[in-house]
Amino acid sequence: QGIRLKPADAGRHDHLGVACLDERKLPEALACFEEAVALEPDVAAHHYHLGIALQRAGRDIDAATCYSKALRLDADFADAEARLGSVALLQGDPTVANAYFRHAAEQASTAPGKIQVAAVLAEIGQVAVAADCLREATALDPLAADAHARLGSLQQQQGRFDEATASFERVLALQPRNADAYLGIVTARKIAPADQALLDRITSVLTDAVLPEQDRATLHYPLGKACDDLSNYEQAMRH
Image 1 (cartoon, one colour):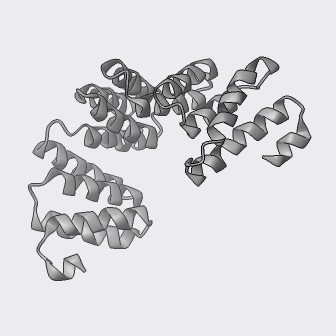
Image 2 (cartoon, one colour; image 1 turned 90 degrees about the vertical axis):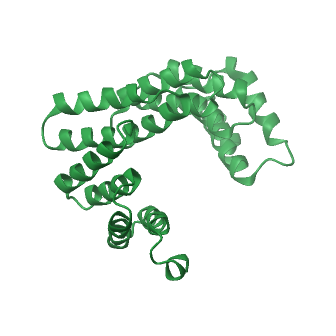
């Protein structure tokens, strides 16, 4: 509706394109981003989004051109640099790719910026660089619960379960009712009788009458998994 009312509004085309990407409507997304670029060729984000759509369509060279244009318009566009690295990697040039990845991680100077770049790096499979980026984010802002949570998830992927547990515990120190952090801890290792205090904490959160239903459902899984680890199979089935 917004585009019909303001067909020359590049921002609306760009926003609609992002929505189409989220819904996996690739042809529609491409059309929206191409229109946004045509209307506002000097906006880095439009070229960046078009690059993402082109890359998903398998047009890696065209995508790289878009990412390069985004960087020419905004030299600090770390997300675009990270995605340029993904194209270089696909083209069989890991040295160039790693240079892009590392520089992208260094470009972000704030904790939110590093979290954003880390999300892009993780999405394109650069887990180690993304984890390093998140460590830098937590150093810049130790209270950034999202950075600790994302780092814990990546550490799990790397098989660094003790470190993942520590990251999730930091999340809980900041957000004691964070259901995903409890889930992360319980799935990172086998639960033992000595972990009863952890299970009591989860049970206590479940008694919160205003706990969102999605969080309530999430918390039942770690309790069930813990009961299974402790060979309490009947109780596990109740969760």
